[in-house]
Image 1 (cartoon, rainbow, N blue to C red):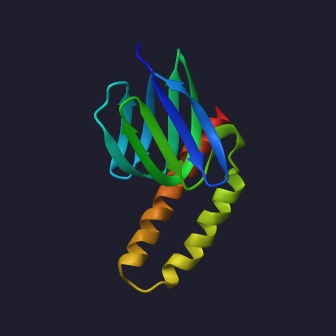
Image 2 (spheres, one colour):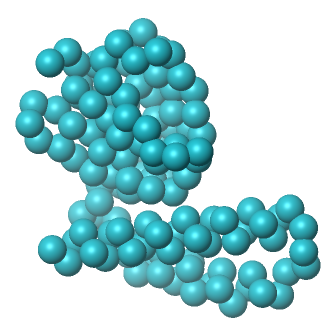
Image 3 (cartoon, rainbow, N blue to C red):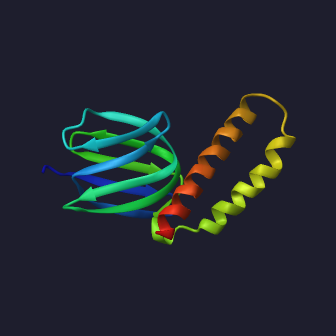
Length: 136
């Protein structure tokens, strides 16, 4: 199966560089998969799991939003925050969720409140996925 180069970076570190057969991304408009030969694309990313599949194995990374760009034969993922799933601090995410649950009801109506509610929902979904996946 054809491969392409993948790089996953965040402000703190270069998290992953390598070849992949497929990468699954949490796009802001829905999940998407990238294969070698994919049409060029630029998309924003929501908090979620990036899955890099190569040679029968896969690696999962938690991101908290960002941007992905695929052109020619490389995928560049610029994440706000990223770490391997087994190194991700679930307690910190849970604390962030609890803090948002306290502050969101006190905000006035408007676009900013809508974005906060959407982000809170994304964090809850990510937390549920991680706690269920890592419990198995």
